[in-house]
Image (cartoon, rainbow, N blue to C red; front, side):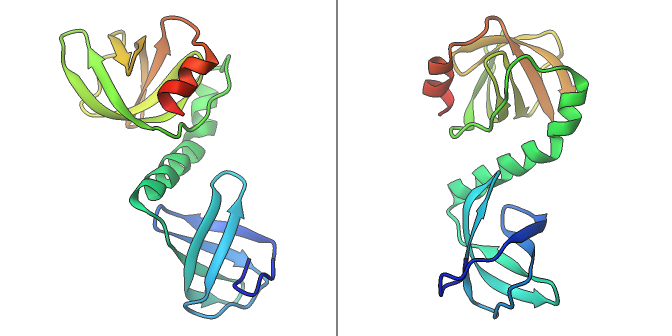
Length: 172
């Protein structure tokens, strides 16, 4: 949606937490303010920094928190097909609103981590150093076990299927 409220269909062709390349029939001007509504990312605002024959590049106008949330969602989108092929999920996964938490190891070590996605049965977590496969951990208040490494994330299977309200309280 342009500043004058005209709306056009568009397609994201490249994305990062700082900007987007967008294919659209609209002819925009550099520095023009634009609002995009993207199915997987929600409402995105920014200014046009470059135009090209079939679209434009947008620099995002977002807080650090919003950029981090976008980065998490992009990471999940990039990896979701590969992760789905690793195993058949029993529960739908989603990108949490509260993605920063603590991962506690059996030896008492507490690590800062980023929850990439979560379900009632487990989570994918970006953490360094990565705990070993088989290690029992606490993700926030939830007990689980590391079941695999996938790229720069660890997959944690929860000891019990979680109550949706409990997941909502911890991770939004």
